[in-house]
Each structure stands twice: as C-alpha cells, then as structure tokens.
Length: 271
Image 1 (cartoon, rainbow, N blue to C red):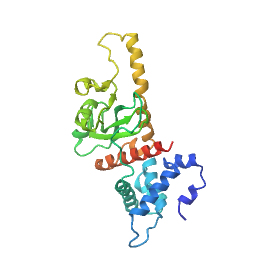
Image 2 (spheres, rainbow, N blue to C red):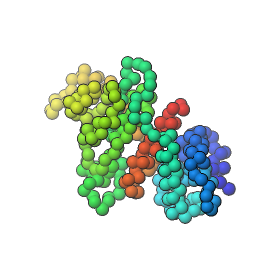
Image 3 (cartoon, rainbow, N blue to C red):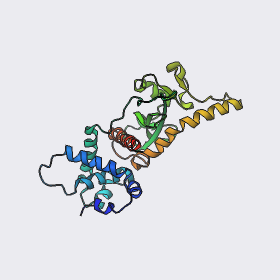
Image 4 (cartoon, helix red, strand yellow):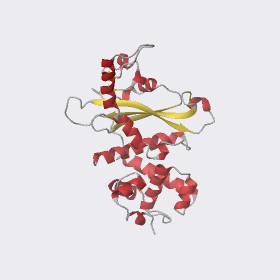
C-alpha cells in the first residue's frame, strides 16, 4: 500500500504542513516524474507518489537518510538514489527555474527589488579555512537572495562559502541585478551607492552620536518595505534542510536551495 494513500485523508492545510507544499504542486511534481522517467528494468519498490513524498520528507524534516529509508521500508542507498532522481528530474523540467527578471506589471514602485543574505551552518569540512565564519564561530554557506518587492517572488540566488561580507557577495554577482531595477538593502550594504546608484538603505548612526528622530522614521519606512525578504527566508527555512546544520556535500546545496525557491515561487503564484 502506497504511503500517499494515507495522506489523502488529510485536509489541504494538514497536507501542506506534512509535505511543505500544496496538493496541486505535489501533483505537478508527480506529473513531471511520470513524463521524464521511463519505466525500464525492474519495477520500483515505491510508487512515484511515494518517491516524491520521500524526497519532500527528507527536505522538510532533514532526518538522516537511514531514518527516512527505514520509514519507507527501503535501503539507505535506495533512499539516497530516489532523492537525487527527484531533484534532477525537477531541475531538468525547467518549471522551477528562477525568473531572474522583474515580472511584468505597472506602478511607480513595481521595479523595486530587495537584496539580503542568510547563512546556512554546515559541518566542518576537511579544508576548514574556506568555510569558516568568524562572526558565528562556525562553518557556513552564505546565500544571497534577490526578491521582487511587490510579488515577493525570488528572482535570483547566489552562494559563497565562509566569512564573505554581504556587500562583497553583491559585488561578485552584480550581473544578476535585473535591468532598470531599484534596490532596497540593509546596513550591511554600505558603499552600494558608488556601485549601484539606484538603491536605498537605512542611515547608519555615526560613532558616539544618536540618530536624528527624522532619520529614525526614514529608516523605519525603509525597513517596513525591506522586511518582506526576511519573511521569504523564514518560509524557505520551513524545509529543515535549509535551516539546520547541512550534513551533505556543498555542491548539492545550491541546487536544493534553488529548487525549493522555485517551488516557493510556484506556490506563491497560486495564492
């Protein structure tokens, strides 16, 4: 009996709590699996729905593959192969690619985008110096996201190891900024005006000086518009694979972050 048959009894909200995605998105992923996987060789032990469910539960809960495999009555190598197969199939489909450009629309502030970075802790690798984060005394990957202010869709992502300053990461990936866009950023992007004039960030108080009350109001207005990206990071990190200490190879992290971001965009378009 497929495990997915038991989940059909759940309500839509309960199903999303369990998998992290809606039923319609789940059906779309299964449909892509059916289109791209040819049924050759021995029949798989798990039906396609359960294979997708196994991958989602791995992202959502981030238990060890041994525990996930035991839950689905398969071997650990089989569980690992299923996760990679689902991920590679979704990448090949192209449905979950990030748009990279501002969506079409009208309005004075339709071209506003928000940039910010978040850190994902990782296990200490063999070459520890490259991924060491001096700020948090741990090893991390830093991920910078660019989102559209109005729709809160993720436009692009870029990544770097270790103690890389937010503004340094921004400079390295300046080509990802959509044309004619206006950028909102936080105080970590000091110096952005010289590099990208069409931008705005909160005013920083001078040493041993209090910030003027009017400037506090100015900062508050910017932060009210910029806070959307923090909500996006919070939503993405409901998938524990992006929130807890990452135990797998770093090369796969970028692919998984982009996939989950693409699924987030798809979910957002259905609201």
